[in-house]
Amino acid sequence: MTLIRNAVASSAAVYGAILVVQAVQRPSAAPIALAAALFLAAAGIAFGSGDDRRLKKTEMALLWTCVGLFLLYGLLKTGGVL
Figure (tube, rainbow, N blue to C red):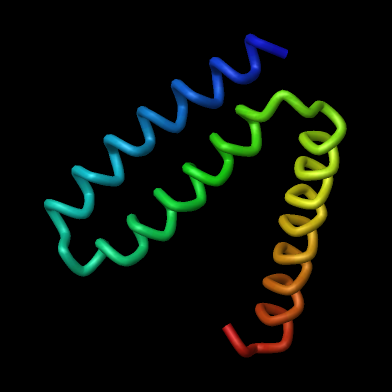
């Protein structure tokens, strides 16, 4: 479990640096960069907790949220909305 936590922390740091560079280069992307940074911070907090049961529930909730959003995107794309 420690390896996963270290991987998430280092990935969040790298992506955080990329988001800062993107926000500086393209000010119009700053709100998106801020939202992504907040998401990374939330993921870091969730993975940093010592409660494995809560971590598993959070992972499953995020997984099903991603599946649902992908389904929504497919329906909107098929329906011609996007």
